[in-house]
Length: 254
Ligand SMILES: [Zn+2]
Image (cartoon, rainbow, N blue to C red; front, side, top):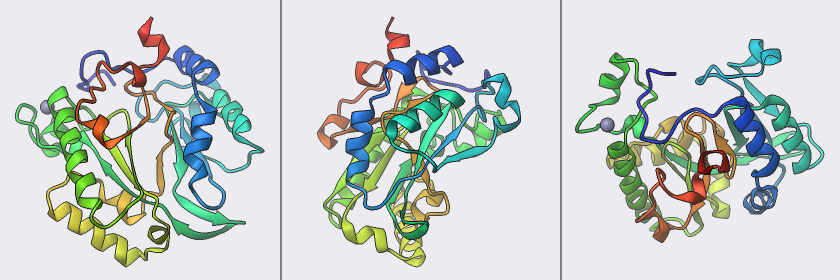
């Protein structure tokens, strides 16, 4: 973990900090409002300590695995399970389920600073060579923020119900138009390739649907100690995740 380059003030959260966040700061009402626009039932997932290597001792064996949370009564029950795992990351499944049957998938785009070629740190290959594949800097963060604005404006031509989320590292754009849920695998591959061809640093696996999990808005990104935060497009122009109090958890605000 200590080999990762990160912007000033960003660092992994301790188990005590994860516990404090999910006990008193995790906003279930906002999570419910986010999920409300999705049809069907939503499954969740957590990763306890894959990247940070920080995990409760009793979960040492499972610290690296993606643990699906699909048996729960309500969001309070999800919160209780998250507090048991104290994960570095919490996700939801973009698939739409009716009963146990998958009936569609939410379309999403993941813009990640690691895929940005930085004037100082170079390409992803350069960063990997130094063992800093998951690291990123303030310049990359700013470049990926500009890409999120441009991608949003590109997608706006096609879709009308778009949401942007600061993920703790980069940005996600979610498409909530009803027609997007029924896109075929082929449609999704074409959309991903088109966006990539236009120069956007997206993770294609998210858009094609191979990776169906996406960070849960309002959860804690435990790698960088930032709150996963939905933003308005106009907000994005001056959004600064290094200093913006809305995405800084209380344990860092002192
Ligand atoms: Zn850089």
